[in-house]
Image 1 (cartoon, one colour):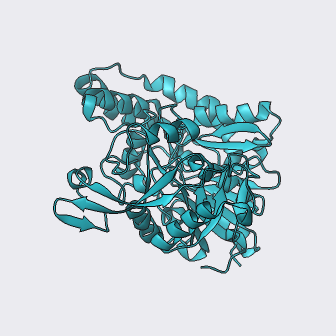
Image 2 (image 1 turned 45 degrees about the vertical axis):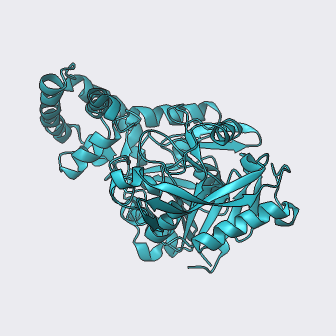
Length: 434
């Protein structure tokens, strides 16, 4: 029996992880975010009510479940407090359910200013970031000059660290990007207003997770973005600034990899991507427009339209390998309901070669042409279906063919946004597959 499940996006993000994490958390005592920041956007629909979370784990709405922000995250405290206040206003006492790693990096106004100035300077060559400072915050972490959560609890030692950091970043803002400097006194005073509110939440998250595991309590680890955006294993440089693969669940939380029992990848029944970067199966019009409209494909964080295309098995198999996936959850099956036929990309054509693995060089990937296998559509509504046997045979064949091509079972199938609209073939928290 598994008592810890890692949920990661198996594409370029926006796969529907939030719903799956929320559903799994019904059987858990703890839920953990282990990377990223408020560039994430996880949408939950519970009994028809829609909530969007950016920093808090998707299981935070459950009573008697602790929610952890792991050391692998970068956290904007004003945005975190705003998100908490929004849920408190709805009667959800999340302030009693959250803990933040003392080693979390604090995202500061300098990071946001740098992120936006860089994207503006790059023009058409911009990466397509959310502009929320995530990349610069991770840069400070790696450069060993970042401000951590434990630092803000000690104002006397925080001030010299912050002013040294401000001097460094203000020089670049003023003399290279030619934008306004940011007053470190203002930043310091803003942090001081949050110290006492944050203090009860800060702890050694890894130690608490280890204690929960020793007691036999179930844990769900929630990834942000998707594996194809991983800084090492994604479509570099069109990636995010953190490791989004399953291994980061260990290093980003402080609980060792040997304690992670089941790795669940979440993929749409087709493919989407937000922002710039290669997308071999993209459909700029026609079916792409249908997928976009039926799937309501807009980013939960930025509202940007998502690019849409057919399911890419080459990319999905790469995700299976780099994450050692035990199973997959297939989401948005119902979006395909009206199509006469459905294509799956099984390989790429690159120059005179057929590739079963994606090239790492970005220029080569951009030149790849998808090779498709075509399956019949089912032309029947699957929306809200919760029973495998009730699915049309053509839908079953599509799902089974995807599973066969990627080499892992599809344990869950989501057929509508609501938490209840889920076909469960094998429960990841009750599985011996690890």
